[in-house]
Image: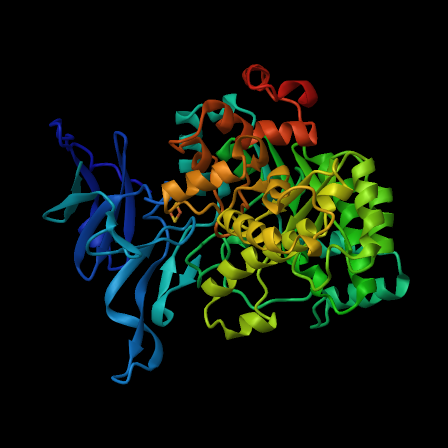
Length: 136
Length: 414
Ligand code: FES
């Protein structure tokens, strides 16, 4: 799954390394790549034209947090009288799900949605022309 | 393959490969040197429904066998009582929908054995106690004779075809047809001496009282053979009280605890600990939070109403502390509460690690090895030492042997 840098391009040797992820033209919305930088395993998602990168180690039992399903947040809508209208998929919020036990994370923040104090490490993503890099 | 997400959107995933899915479990095992520790998983599962064609022929009654064979061949009928359930969480737990896509060696061991070895190797589990999945509902079968026949066929297949061809890494506590005590006894007598049989298991989703007189001969037969009796819990949305629940989460959380709370209460209050003092009893797959609750509740009532539990010579909690518990699904949200629970059940000698893999809420060995309040001895005992003693399982390498020795678990195991 991890893509290598294009031939002839040198990896930046700073303490913070830029790791090639993919060509932007090869990633469409809903795509993800897993890249490895030293001990880091990073999931890079493309969602609504933007890139999000998080640690691939789930905060529950260490599963591959970024390798599961992406699925919209489930909401329960209430009427003004507090009765339930039932369950709906959110129009705006996307989650990614750890495949081991189903823990859900907020695509835009990396927060665990059942306890937002728990947050996956977030990595910076750089777009350079048609190339996408993650900084680790 | 594609999984269906919201609004029919398709998310592409690769084929399932258990070793790859559990790569992080392997990493944990290496970091923690778990291979040096004998690890026994006292509750793992396979999907026996994928093997109906293999074991249904072992049914004894020709008419019931024909009925069942036809049903699994082409008819639409089901042969096991079924429950509504969403264990896969709408595909979020991907190994459920992707299960069929995993490749195994057709010339190798049985598929279930190959898959089992993959997850065991990833987690550093040396031995697994193999239990069925759908048959955990067998107690709700409307026909007693079908429960008997299905258990018989499954137990023969497991002891004759599966476990002997699995490099001695699986053992089982065989499923008892508990709605027919005479037949349960016959199965204890038939299978109790077979290799890889560590004991017998009662599925707790059922409506019979474990204290009823008809069962005493079954318990005695298990005790006489030096085997273990276990109670394996499960959820049941069809249970009238659970019909009030509108979410699977609720039914699952309550059901798994409830059936063991119920049967453990009857077991303790009716003095089974006095009647069968040498019979090891294990309560499986209810997690642990229910145990302190029940200990306190039963002690409280017993102090005031001892005349309703005249066989007891000590408090209910003390009998509960004589029994064993499997860890999973371990409630780990409040570390102080968990520590208190471990103290109350004498975890160092009474608790045994279980994964429940491949089910959705499995636990890794690191759930135990990473606990901050446990001694080294307690970790070794819980992860495998206690089970090694109970089921007489030998170490698989020299370091495991040394560790078993160090913590006093070797003598019986080797
Ligand atoms: S490890 Fe990710 S949900 Fe459990």
